[in-house]
Amino acid sequence: MQVYFDNSATTKPCEAAVKSALEVMNEEFGNPSSIHSKGYNASQLLEKSRSIIADSLSVDAFAVYFTPCGTVSNNTAIFGAVNALRRRGNKIVTTAFEHPSVAKCMDKLSEDGFEVVRIMPDESGNISCEEFENAIDEKTILVSLMAVNNEVGSVLPFDKIKKIIKRNNSPALLHVDAVQGYLKIDIKPQKCGIDLMSISAHKIHALKGSGALYIAKGVRIKPYVLGGGQENGICSGTQAMPNIAAFASAVNELRDIDSRYQKMCELNAYLKQELLKIDGVSINSPENAIPYIVNISLNGIPSQVSVNYLSSKGVYVSAGSACSKGHRSEVLTAMKLSPERIDSAVRVSLCYTNTKEEIDYFIQIIKKAFLELSKK
Ligand code: PLP
Image 1 (tube, helix red, strand yellow):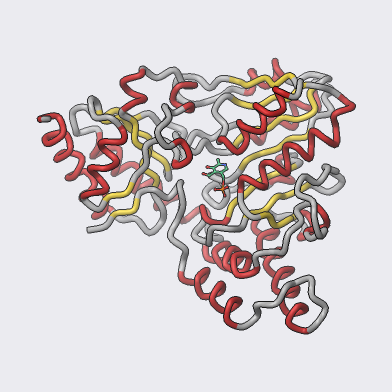
Image 2: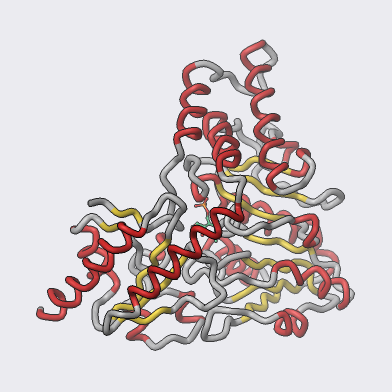
């Protein structure tokens, strides 16, 4: 049996996404900037895809800019906002457990002399609005926080921050990294007062190689990727049409967030119930985590060892985030979990095609892992 429980790292492309990508590669392979009819057809498909993604966010199509991935969306938003607003202040507020595609931008800005305030999560992986209230002031030009944490699944109060920015007389733009939240929870950026929001296609059953950045009407950022001026100059580079078409097809498939969420809650409850029957398993994800992510520790078994053991039995999970290969999880460290618990942590990330039978198999292998690996 093969069980793929690493959906926060990437997802299996859905059939509709693969079909769309193949169609574009085989037939409408033109460059959307070309003026002949192949180019025109590609540009029509580009705009149709943009509308589908914009619709899923309840925003106008012109507010959606395609990028190559979530990482480029985050870099474009952060450096673009800071470069546009640098004369208005020197302070940036973020959290201490952002994805590296945000955290490393913050390291760079800090090196460049900006004051970067990183709010710590509590032990359950949550951050309260009060922390943002205390940190955001008149000198703050950017607030950047994730919607959903990629390692433990906690949901951050991204929908409450704009009010704080306004109340505290701050000129800050609000950037939300929604890569792990998009189409898992309902995020409507306009309603929440989000200025900039990043999403990524390969986390939602489309292909690697495309993402998007939402930029609210009237918000100006300085382009970070320069070149031929595609995407209204916000992210230059020939648009990856097969990936973009696949992105839109996957979005169409995943529109019904609520019924999927219900199914995921049932799977999540079953998984946790069965895990907690096993001696030595502890759950690191908070109660309010999205049902798609369950971070656990397998007492006494180092993460890499359990990931390799599970892989040898056809079960695919990750040790922390896929991007933190070999490093102690900064997310769990920020949550101040014990070193033993951090070093034995495994992230199980589910998707709507997973089943109870797969969970049963996973549980069986975890039990075996305790028997076989603790013998050595
Ligand atoms: N932000 C978060 C929260 C993520 O989990 C990831 C990827 O894991 C990214 C950004 C980066 O997205 P991409 O892999 O599309 O660059």
